[in-house]
Length: 240
Image (cartoon, rainbow, N blue to C red; front, side):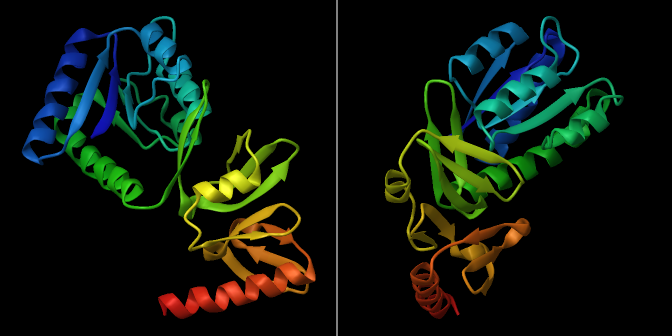
């Protein structure tokens, strides 16, 4: 069951968007809970209280909080939640792109464009659902990470820091041992010196350095390199 929030202080568009999404879900037999917010303040309060959704459909120009401000709040709590702007204004498109939002739709084109956007949204959510997911959950944060999006995880004092394929970082106050127990170990190896590496992202091994995707380099011991090579041989042998 997917969770979708719609926020617009123009009640007419709020009702129209809800009806169109509900009809789309009925026609495509998609289970979804859709919650509408006529106030950006109420949505902001729910986000700060840890009530998170898989996708947010937001107007941009609203009272008290703009859609851009709401999107930034969401991004602080979840790196996987999809943001869709449904707005009357094209002037915010560049700023929205810089925030890596999922889609930007003009209200005048909603009836035609929204089904295409929902097609893409539910394909994306299904992809996340069908892949191994790591969940970071605390009083102030709820983040679902596709395991394939994790390049490596390192220790930083009492935190585990996740380096991700989108260039972002997430952290959790947890030991690396406990992180590893939560992961599917098929693609993950716990090396010495406090590093967990996703072998899917390993590109090259040079002496004691591991070159990874997105320009990352991880350093480990000679024993760590030997363990990694043995792990890679088993990994590639299983999937070839």
